[in-house]
Amino acid sequence: MSGKSSNSELEEREFKFTDKDFDLLKRIVGEHTGIVLTEAKRNMVYGRLARRLRVLKLSSFADYIALLEGDNDEELVNFINSVTTNLTAFFRENHHFEHLKNHVFPTLLEKNQVSRRIRIWSAGCSTGEEPYSLSITVNDFFADYPGWDVKILATDIDTNVLEKAASGIYTEERIEGLDPALIKQWFVKGKGEKSGMVKVRSELQKLVSFKQLNLLQEWPMKGQFDVLFCRNVVIYFDKPTKIKLFDRYADTLVSKGNMFIGHSETLFQISDRFSSLGGTIYQKKT
Ligand SMILES: C[S@@+](CC[C@H](N)C(=O)[O-])C[C@H]1O[C@@H](n2cnc3c(N)ncnc32)[C@H](O)[C@@H]1O
Image 1: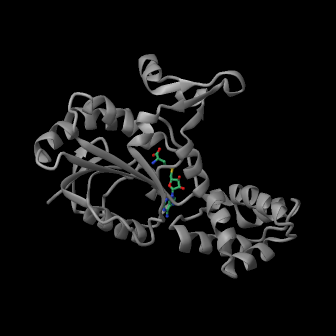
Image 2: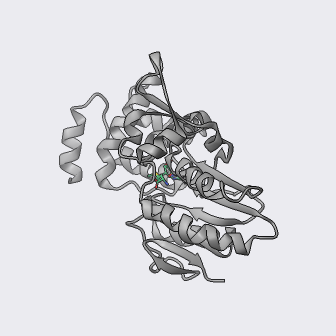
């Protein structure tokens, strides 16, 4: 869409949304989240932020931008929550979970036999489907190996998705297509006014800690991770941000630790600290 046609189209809308407004918002988003808003996101940005203008009873995007630039921390959180893309699913790219079960966990049984401790990080966990899929995989596998201390840290920048994730409550459509035996074992169906909803079993929640974390800022975690899921998060970041981030990911993984990225992502010209195992699964080199 050209700037001109988008402008004439958007000027007929409730709020004036100029190229300058969009450029300033792009810069603020980039600085705070690393996300690069492309031209294709212009309408999405307008739609989501127009809601914020209405809530705040502002009459222009210029006023909204002034509010953000005035270091209004509360609105900055709402702003970031409005522009993130949170698409996710239970057992998305199921081969990653199969690889964990068939290769990574059996290897860790040997490698970590003294500590009997395994740490997993779901970085950019969105509404929680990814860490709960990890928790199901861990619970299933380690049922035969009692005494192992396995924990999943699940982080995201977006406080709204984290709240939903921590509740563990989903609509039934979210688990459609999953194996019925798995659903029976790990989800509780709502009754009465909760019908149409499901909740993950508390055993799944016990292994997962949800925390807000901006990947561009300091990471407070002290120990290293054996496994890192960082899928479909950096696709929205520019190349220099990706290069820095994957270097930090490598530092946070143990030697030979495993990293899983999204199916459309690549480390080509981004990082040489990992070996590819195929299927967007990587292993830290040393
Ligand atoms: C498309 S979802 C991916 C969810 C899940 N990993 C998956 O693959 O199904 C991307 C998530 O990254 C989060 N995100 C974007 N920028 C971030 C940042 N700078 N720090 C932490 N999380 C971020 C978004 O809020 C969103 O929930």
